[in-house]
Length: 606
Image (cartoon, rainbow, N blue to C red; front, top):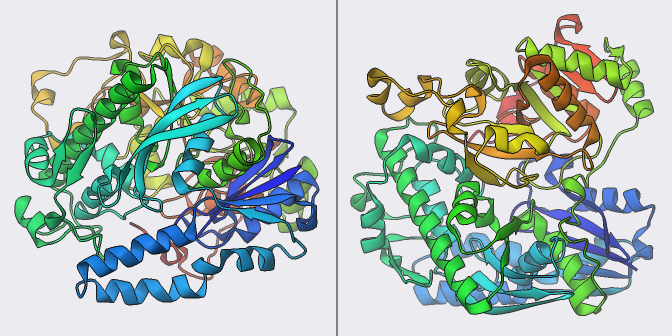
């Protein structure tokens, strides 16, 4: 039984393939189209999934789309009618796309999947999120919590999963949405909605949460069970092309920050405030879910579940013994959830659970490239390189990292979801006090305040961080252990805003945020043995079991997928070395790089 899951037409379109219930492949369309957060029909991602399984479209038994287009269309029409005549411009922009494409998905799917004549099922959006969270999780039963911007009508849902069934017991409905509230502050602070939310989260520790009372008094009525209503007088997302209006600007002392404009203390304080409110909503909701379900464990999905600071607090302070978060928690993961929902819930197929081990294969579900394919690329382009045996390669890369070189690392199957997890990564020395600024300014071309994540050997995570369990998907924030941190002197304690970045705070400064936290990835021998061996070699050489791991891309560009993407990114930046499979490339040996266009103009630099 071959089931294809598809998400498309909002953002982060993706495809996922199940064969007899096993996750065989999953990937986002952006990795091929090179358009970040590409929303279009994922034709190339589907082609990859079929190729990975050796299938053709006619071999598929069922296709599952991640939401119900007619329900979403109903919500749009009702919302526009409620606010009419305000919102006419937004209505005129949205309707042609719906009438041309989104309402005719069965026809589009059958056209794109030439030869497919089978069934097409449409789970609801939050059913897809819930399925993506529960069915791959490592437990037979768990409470389920999904939080995002909006699906059809639902913005938050919770329920339970047992064996091969999920049941959603309660929901919060549009326009009252934690995801849209967070996105409103993303917009107001000058970042791009649906992609800049993680920047807002990274900015929060530079500010003070001085606006929390204002948010809770003016913008929302938050109840003890985590439910809330937003004061819609301050927002324009129901009827306009922006998220906030003039009342919102008056409330917070002036107009929104212009994209790329200077960051002021106001933006930092707003980031700190909405982050604290978000964490409070998540904690209250989780406590309520725990009381109502009686479950010991919780699984999460939806875009808000990518807020790893909130996840860290939920793990530390929440009522559940353990939590598990779908690594592709956003809309891309909806493709996988739809396929899993179809297999377990629609077809009533049993679920195999290996207690304590999830079914995501480390999220390494994208394409891999053989040594022969990489060698052919290098030879065709006449690119200087050295081939090294595995152990020699590991020792050499560890040595380069110890010398504070920046290394592009391209190995094995590409990750599914927004995080690079040691297959399409840029690596650096976590103990270097200059590595964070070097990577931000010379490699990633992004804002200096953005923190980097550490990769750490799973068996040694508690030696570096206040974390006592795995975090393989980089979705939990934990504090650096106190004995590794240094105390600030009086002058350093007086610093505020971005100036906080100048202070070395721990023995692993490149991955220690200004609040002494880090977004941790634990590396496991069973899911990524080569990367685990690299960390082990680096530890043996330096006595440090932590390295910087950031996604293999530059600002505004999707994570690289192919050897060609990796080499192009390598040459466009000041990266020192590139590893493609068994091949090591030295930047000093490469021919001069020439662009036939201004490549940065192709990407939206938000």
